[in-house]
Length: 106
Image (cartoon, rainbow, N blue to C red; front, top):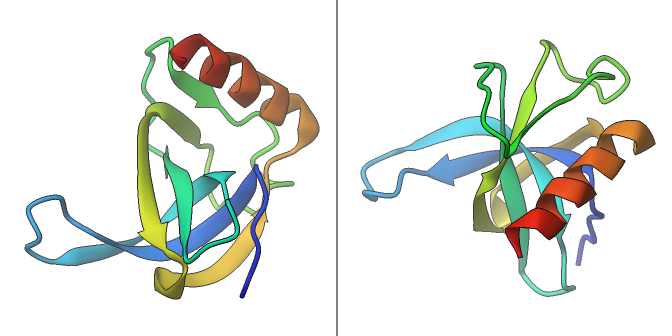
């Protein structure tokens, strides 16, 4: 079974909460406990400014096409079978910011 790590950038097919349809989009891995699912946070190029949105300063190094934001308050679990590919990895300076915000959530 594929194992992902905190900060991996994935491209996956996500179902809409209503169950009507799906969309292929990027996400950042928060936790892979070694089972069939992975906990992720939304990654978007729609720049927002809440205390839970982390701008990825090294977005090119993370293999992202556009400047992006991780929305740490928008987490969800997906089946690993829905992952299309691993795109890249968030760099350490940005990962440290993700950790800080994550700890503020709990």
